[in-house]
Image 1 (cartoon, rainbow, N blue to C red):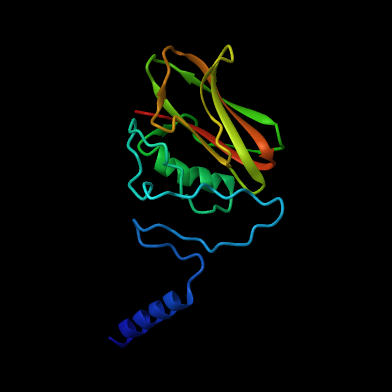
Image 2 (image 1 turned 90 degrees about the horizontal axis):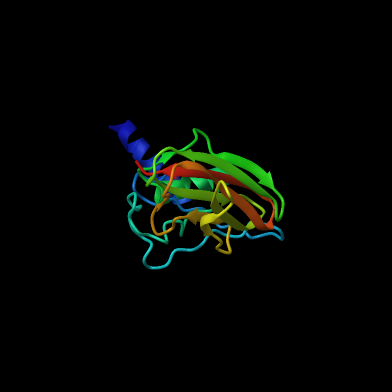
Length: 194
């Protein structure tokens, strides 16, 4: 009993003092301590509005705010994973590991993927780390015809923000990430609806 009281007191003390790195209970949002922004620091992730405090969308469900309110990440990959949990819930990545590269302003990187059946649907998620201010992502076919794009003025991009986009024909496609402003690490992944 004394041990139980001591554990409870320790827990309360840690909560009162604030435990850095502690994970919140499942289902509760994580909050990060805001740090002052230095010159050249990454643009903050978009802030949520009153309509974004809800469950992640299901595949095919319309939701153009799924990437809003993501906590400030330590890396582009962490941001990508957080956004994918919200925007690509229930979808499968088309390659085992996301593409993670360092890009300078106006540099681009392509992530090719192959579609075997007509009518397959996808969502592309990209996130920039520290130093990325504006990230654009396009999905193009073999002839570089744009199928869909995301060009918001921030460091995250979701192609198919209202739900997965579908392709009419089998073939080779590419997700193209381009840094419009800033430089730093970019993570990119294509997710397929089942």
